[in-house]
Length: 304
Image 1 (tube, rainbow, N blue to C red):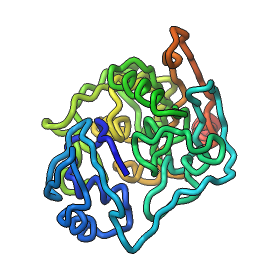
Image 2: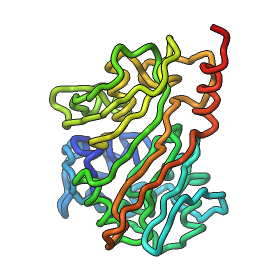
Image 3: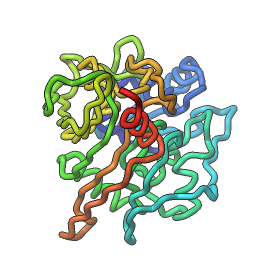
């Protein structure tokens, strides 16, 4: 398997990166595999503590000998919003993993993509992430681009790197924001003691989110968020730092609200990009999903 490190994994230790990929397999097994020479970073053997940089290449074969991990195509319904011969945009539901882990190798978006599009999907990010150019968290729904081949993957990755794709989200935030518009310009990096989380930190990567208030409910606010950069958990980290975390986002301090949902009420509702190898501009938008609609209806219709 060959993996290319993207900007969201820049700064991670090699063993932590692989532990996240092979979730459920102990860090000690991962470290032992690295030390035994089964893992190459840019063609050479490195220590487990080696810090990754964007565009690093990781190669390994049979990293975990006692487990055979296969990703099978599965006939799972897909909401394909737009597609051509090179790519597709799907509307991922909340609750679905974007790609498999060692613990969950079925029921993911990748399983569904393999069934629909076969083995020609891009593999630049490895077998676990066939077709995946950018991710949405399990409990974040919405529009997500899929590369049907490696050439398109490289094209879309270049658009992302150069900030040439417009991505907008809708969210319900806790509390009442003071202003109607914000530009949140705060660096984001990996949490020092909880590597599954991100945090605002001075040694992090520049990260910018533009926030506009759409509707106020007193103790909650409906907002539109535009990503200028695309760091892991960016919206969730930025809004949490403002003391207005995404509704029901327990990982970033929101707690559980009166309206129960699958974690964060956050949806990627808008994408704008240049069609691969063409000057045509594609602009896509989706309606609020069931989770967002449920919370909006509660706040709009409750007795004041």
